[in-house]
Length: 440
Image (tube, rainbow, N blue to C red; front, side, top):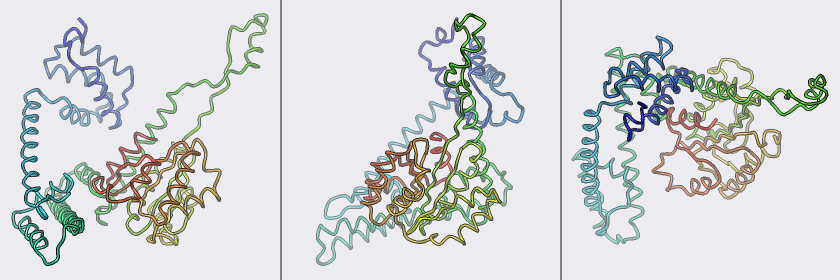
């Protein structure tokens, strides 16, 4: 009896493929052969027995003892028992209803001239998470503003901006306090490096403390090495033969009287990726750009050419320093000290025009351009024009934006530039890994 006949309405193959993808992301070597072996093993067991199900997958997908802990963790998280799954669904539904009630209450409490303030769902959730005292103070502020002298409805956008800024401030303070608490409890309990890695992966890059920088750099190196291995494996798994070599085919088949039985092919030229990295190093972007440089530095074995430029009010070529392959920590320190534009303003249009003029060999159909910037630039119209011209000449443009997605509508530059490029949120190491893993 086949698996589909045993469970006609299941999605076992799709779920198994997804699970295998998660294992591959953790570094386990799983290919088509292992997938077929797993499906065959599952056809021989009782799929309703969780212990047999896990044993079958473990026997076919885990090749090394060191991979066992990662397999166990992913299996327990992915294949949740039915009762636990149903309980989680019920809890999720209940939490959703409670959240909707809190958001309705927030809308009713924050009103100006009888109308609710235009706050995003994320901002309403942040308001709902405040203490009772904090919510009352904010309500009093809105009410005093509404009843002030000469206050007209046109003041509403200004009030909304102030409220949003206050909510962002409260969220930042909460994250900082949570980070301090996590650091203290980690030191007291002796938690392992895996917990620290997870915390650093999800933390806003700009909020990472100097004391955590060594651990963050090690995490970046580990993730970039894993991605480099995946890229090289994908390159090697492609077709190994190039175009037909007619001359060699004729020569090899002369013994058959000119009738061609054996075709000869030219060796396939393996072209590694070419990446052009443009890093905004204005005051608000320095730490984000530094992390992206470190991540891509570890991919040099998998890319044909990594060219790196920094820009703010002018353009600077960092490629010679990166190609020196010296210690990255000291390399970045030298680059930042030497560079004349780290921490300045931003003129994206000028930087793109200078690259097109001085480095035309870097712009071709095999180049993937990665831009790290919050889009805040002078002369936005020129920047959009230069991006449109660049887009037509390269393979793709990937834009990494550290600004939270819920704030993108606040900036015209995000809207205008987003029409020209693939724009992705990238304020954490986890987001950086996700975006680049799927697109390089």
